[in-house]
Amino acid sequence: MTAVEQVDQVFVTAKRHVVDLAPLEFQPIISVLLSIIPILAVFPLLFAITTILERKGLGRIQNRLGPNRVGPYGILQPVADGLKTLFKESVQPRAAEKVIFFLAPVVLVIPALLAFSVIPYGRNMVPLEMDAALLFFFAVGAGTELAVFMAGWASRNKYSLLGAMRAIAQMLSYEIPLILSAVPVVMLSGTLSPAAIVSAQDTYTATIAHWNVFKPWGFAAFIVFLIAAAAESNRSPFDLPEGESEIIAGYYIEYSGFKFALFFLGEYLGLFAICGLGITLFLGGYTAPFSFLNWIPSWIWFFTKLLALVCFFIWVRGTMPRVRMDQLMNFAWKFMLPMALINILAAAAWRFVPILGFRWSISALIVATGYFALGEGLTQKGQYGKRTYKFAS
Amino acid sequence: MPSSFYILALFTIASGFFAMSLRNLVHCALCLALSFLGVAGLFLHLNAGFIAFAQILVYVGAVAILIVFAILLTHNTEEKKGESATNLVLSIPLSAAVAAILLNGAFSTQLALRGTGNTAPSVRELGTALMTSYVVPLEIIGVLLTVALLGAIVLALPERSSPPEAG
Image (spheres, rainbow over the protein chains, first blue to last red):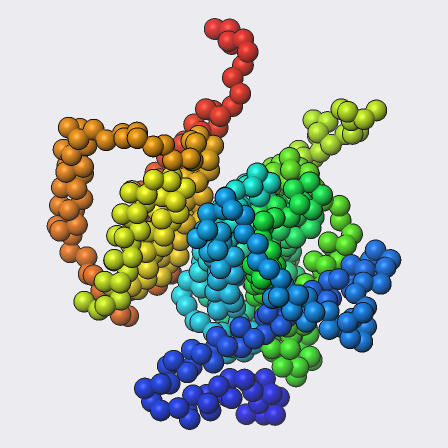
């Protein structure tokens, strides 16, 4: 092994050494623990970093300072927030369904953590290798909807039930384009295993990587995926389930103290997981964009891309107004879903047209035609014409 | 038979039992979701990962939510006291007949109850089988589901105030 490979594989070799130290009968369980503990340590830490990044970044966008009292430049703010939520009293409504009210945040956080088990963080760094790993990712994501319903219903509050219903309708609608946007990648790499999908993108032509996002179908799928990911993780501009101004935090309005923090944690963990999946599917996972940058360890690439995507979502949150409920649903069913289906057609064209130039132009043509035709369909019929006000003149 | 099978089976049956017997319909729906989860666990126990995850995705993610929505939109979730909907004359023979059909099916199949190790089909083999030997059933199911979807949309469309003129 060269020095570069040694640095690249440092976690893999370290884990193997530790496992070898243990007696034979404990080796499987130690190996599993050594895969789980880093996930449990790294991602909640990343959550803490992201909260300060988000508050500082939003402050910068909105021309204010953001938190700046705790520690130098306010970087210890997450610690203060965490301690505050730990010590706060956990208030429970008297009419609430006790068991379900308690279980809801747990049911929300566990699937979010499970989803991390199939993402490749670096070369040979997949915690759980599985044949149907991609399906596993989407399957555990399905548990969140039930958790949201449990939270909203068990609170016995009309605002939380309203928020839960909004959230579930939104999640169900955007789950379909999310899964369909992953289909072209699966079609063309011929596998459901994230590690194999990444290694299929690990080739270079003239120093530029063969990431899926650089192909016409991959680009369209990536955009659909990003929008659906924002909606799935209730990020702005799709944060209607929280709707701070009308339904005051939606389905977790009645939660306080650490349970409230768990909802936040679950939401951000979901965001990280879905960003990790997007990186795996479209942005080449742990591979470098240019072949001369291959000396940088693969895990650094993964986490750099993850932070970049998270910053992108913060930027979107700071600059985009929230969409309306009917716009949200129209957009999901009349644009995102057909676009994802058309994109599958473009991927099929890419697969079956033999000549490289033709392949590019036909695939790009299908994507562009679909985009403009669907866009026309959305904006016509005077739906989004001049705004009329019913009650204010 | 390993103990994990019994744990999963007990979990599935117990949550199914509670899904029938609890008084609050939303609790029943949540227990039903739990029992779907148990069935997915049984699939995993048979080394059928793909089917297990598809089960979770479809049943826990969509069907359970659909049931919950249906309950909330149609039914008053408060429990009704002193009201029993049991009709013993009708229900006992009916449930016995259903149980007989299911048990007959269960005992007449030769399915293995244990994971068969490396012989479990991979996702690739499943896909190839679906697209070659079983393509006709797959397409028929696809058409059936599309028809059901269209029917649901037709039912949900707002009715016209005046009936359309004939001819």
